[in-house]
Length: 111
Image (cartoon, rainbow, N blue to C red; front, side, top):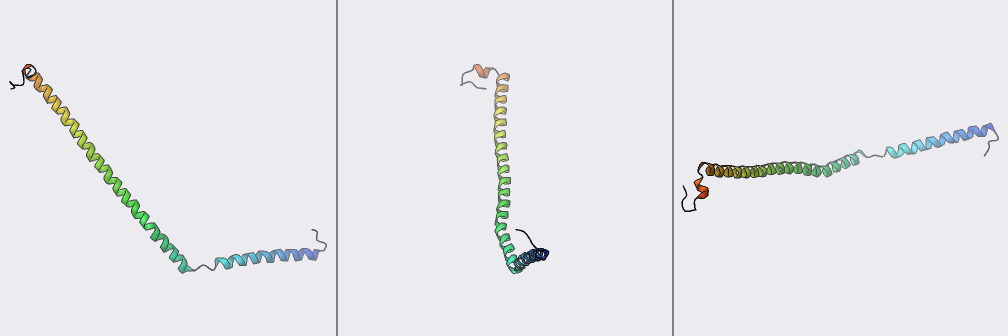
Protein backbone atom coordinates (compact mmCIF):
# COMPACT_ATOMS: atom_id res chain seq x y z
CA UNK A 1 0.00 0.00 0.00
CA UNK A 2 1.40 3.37 -0.95
CA UNK A 3 0.42 6.86 0.03
CA UNK A 4 0.04 9.18 -2.95
CA UNK A 5 -0.38 12.48 -1.12
CA UNK A 6 1.25 13.93 2.00
CA UNK A 7 -2.16 14.92 3.32
CA UNK A 8 -3.03 11.26 3.36
CA UNK A 9 0.04 10.62 5.56
CA UNK A 10 -1.22 13.17 8.07
CA UNK A 11 -4.63 11.52 8.01
CA UNK A 12 -3.04 8.13 8.65
CA UNK A 13 -1.04 9.58 11.58
CA UNK A 14 -4.19 11.17 13.01
CA UNK A 15 -6.04 7.87 12.68
CA UNK A 16 -3.22 6.01 14.47
CA UNK A 17 -3.20 8.56 17.30
CA UNK A 18 -6.97 8.38 17.61
CA UNK A 19 -6.74 4.60 17.72
CA UNK A 20 -4.18 4.80 20.58
CA UNK A 21 -6.41 7.24 22.46
CA UNK A 22 -9.38 4.93 21.99
CA UNK A 23 -7.43 1.96 23.42
CA UNK A 24 -6.24 4.09 26.33
CA UNK A 25 -9.77 5.23 27.12
CA UNK A 26 -11.13 1.69 26.92
CA UNK A 27 -8.43 0.43 29.24
CA UNK A 28 -9.08 3.23 31.73
CA UNK A 29 -12.81 2.61 31.64
CA UNK A 30 -12.30 -1.04 32.49
CA UNK A 31 -9.84 -0.24 35.27
CA UNK A 32 -12.02 2.40 36.92
CA UNK A 33 -14.96 0.05 37.40
CA UNK A 34 -13.46 -1.59 40.48
CA UNK A 35 -15.81 -1.63 43.45
CA UNK A 36 -13.87 -1.10 46.70
CA UNK A 37 -16.50 -2.93 48.76
CA UNK A 38 -16.18 -5.95 46.49
CA UNK A 39 -12.40 -5.89 46.92
CA UNK A 40 -12.77 -5.68 50.70
CA UNK A 41 -15.16 -8.64 50.67
CA UNK A 42 -12.71 -10.63 48.57
CA UNK A 43 -9.89 -9.85 50.99
CA UNK A 44 -12.05 -10.85 53.98
CA UNK A 45 -12.99 -14.08 52.22
CA UNK A 46 -9.33 -14.72 51.51
CA UNK A 47 -8.43 -14.23 55.17
CA UNK A 48 -11.31 -16.45 56.27
CA UNK A 49 -10.04 -19.17 53.94
CA UNK A 50 -6.43 -18.82 55.10
CA UNK A 51 -7.06 -18.73 58.88
CA UNK A 52 -8.07 -22.43 59.17
CA UNK A 53 -4.95 -23.45 57.27
CA UNK A 54 -2.83 -21.29 59.57
CA UNK A 55 -4.46 -22.83 62.66
CA UNK A 56 -3.95 -26.33 61.24
CA UNK A 57 -0.29 -25.50 60.64
CA UNK A 58 0.15 -24.40 64.26
CA UNK A 59 -1.64 -27.52 65.51
CA UNK A 60 0.66 -29.76 63.46
CA UNK A 61 3.67 -27.93 64.90
CA UNK A 62 2.40 -28.54 68.46
CA UNK A 63 1.66 -32.21 67.72
CA UNK A 64 5.13 -32.64 66.21
CA UNK A 65 6.71 -31.11 69.33
CA UNK A 66 4.72 -33.45 71.60
CA UNK A 67 5.64 -36.41 69.40
CA UNK A 68 9.34 -35.59 69.70
CA UNK A 69 9.02 -35.37 73.49
CA UNK A 70 7.18 -38.70 73.65
CA UNK A 71 9.92 -40.33 71.55
CA UNK A 72 12.55 -38.88 73.88
CA UNK A 73 10.65 -40.21 76.91
CA UNK A 74 10.38 -43.68 75.33
CA UNK A 75 14.06 -43.60 74.43
CA UNK A 76 14.87 -42.75 78.05
CA UNK A 77 12.82 -45.77 79.13
CA UNK A 78 14.84 -48.02 76.80
CA UNK A 79 18.09 -46.49 78.05
CA UNK A 80 17.03 -47.11 81.65
CA UNK A 81 16.07 -50.70 80.79
CA UNK A 82 19.46 -51.36 79.18
CA UNK A 83 21.32 -49.73 82.07
CA UNK A 84 19.47 -51.79 84.67
CA UNK A 85 20.17 -54.95 82.66
CA UNK A 86 23.88 -54.12 82.50
CA UNK A 87 23.96 -53.35 86.22
CA UNK A 88 22.20 -56.62 87.00
CA UNK A 89 24.69 -58.49 84.84
CA UNK A 90 27.59 -56.70 86.54
CA UNK A 91 26.21 -57.43 90.01
CA UNK A 92 25.72 -61.11 89.09
CA UNK A 93 29.30 -61.27 87.79
CA UNK A 94 30.60 -59.50 90.90
CA UNK A 95 28.66 -61.87 93.14
CA UNK A 96 30.12 -64.86 91.30
CA UNK A 97 33.66 -63.47 91.59
CA UNK A 98 33.34 -62.67 95.28
CA UNK A 99 31.61 -65.91 96.17
CA UNK A 100 32.72 -68.64 93.73
CA UNK A 101 30.85 -71.35 95.65
CA UNK A 102 27.62 -70.12 94.05
CA UNK A 103 28.77 -71.44 90.66
CA UNK A 104 29.60 -74.93 91.98
CA UNK A 105 26.88 -75.48 94.60
CA UNK A 106 23.60 -77.04 93.78
CA UNK A 107 20.52 -74.88 94.01
CA UNK A 108 19.73 -76.11 97.56
CA UNK A 109 22.73 -74.60 99.40
CA UNK A 110 22.76 -70.94 98.54
CA UNK A 111 24.48 -68.36 100.70
